[in-house]
Image (cartoon, rainbow, N blue to C red; front, side, top):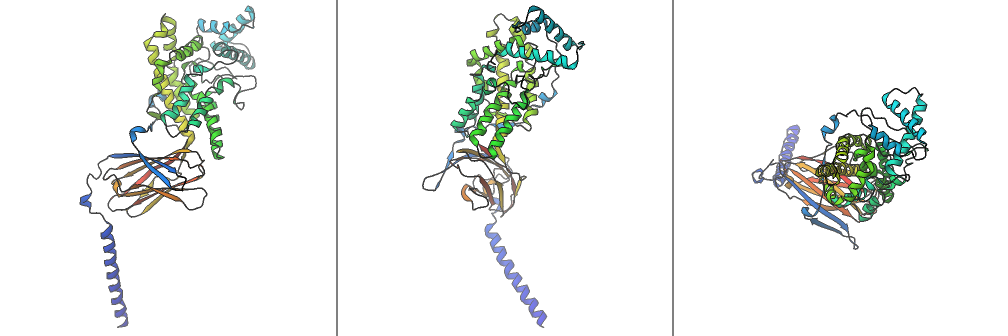
Length: 478
């Protein structure tokens, strides 16, 4: 009897609890018939500015998307990876150009140096490897002198080309502070004035031509050529080290130095050693003097997603190299080449593709990502994504991307803390808006968070029947 009584009481308790749970669930579950356009594939994008106020409050303001530019990331073109490099030996005109720079040598010494260099190119030299390298090193010195002057004249003429390509970053991406964008411009020509750098790569007797020689049959000058991609990687890594120590100002100086190299590699004359170098300086001077025909080419709305700066930059080189001979042919055969429409088109294409790479290299350096994989969002559960140890800047962009079959179910907060672990201050940025759209992109422009190193995204799914995941939460340091 006692056992039956206990069992009866247990059954009654279970029924009561079950009824209570059913009542709670019924109160929370949204009537699925009211969810219109489920799985419609639509996307919504919003731009939100967060700014601390003097009274301790947080200003939250939505900005019309038409006022903000957030370029789209795209993969580097697959066709760049399958370019067949043309085999080309230097012409007599190419050798004559190098010879003209040997102003400190006698006619006999010039003839002997060029003659031996030709044998090296043809594979017929009887000199030792060391002696051949010495010949090539001398040629490297004269190529730098011939194409860039004794002091190293700015490539792409420094201004306006490098300056515009570097400072265009701040114009395209509004989250870069004006001060840091000015730093990119201030250091855009630094590499031309410091051709012995980085000294970890360039021997004390050499000079950095900011190049990568790709033509079959072409020979890089040891101590002068092929430092471009590695120099780019070196200074981007230096910038990353500055970010680790929260020195954002110093990081932007290193980025400014680095971008010069990717911009140079977009110029075809940085993809060969001797071939067509007689047109190098004339072409870059022409670009500077005709900038009104070229500058709008930098108005790109996409950037190339970078995985490995040093290796990805070589893909730009191979693309750029295709234009070397066509550009030189125009300059050699058209008496009015400075007004040649095809030359303008070629150069605009090169500038546009180089700017996409410049933007990609920049973003690769300044982005902090969550190390967590896509975070699932379940009904009536809260999902968290953290990014810790972020360097502080007066301006940052926090891109949030969510795939969910009904974004109108979601409530979203951004949280931040100066120290970790610690309590997060939070601001709600999304409150069950958007209806049945399936994709949500929120760009949070965080201004004035100079002492914040830790960020958190919190997402709550407030209704049943639809689920999704946070596919991106990252921070870009401006």
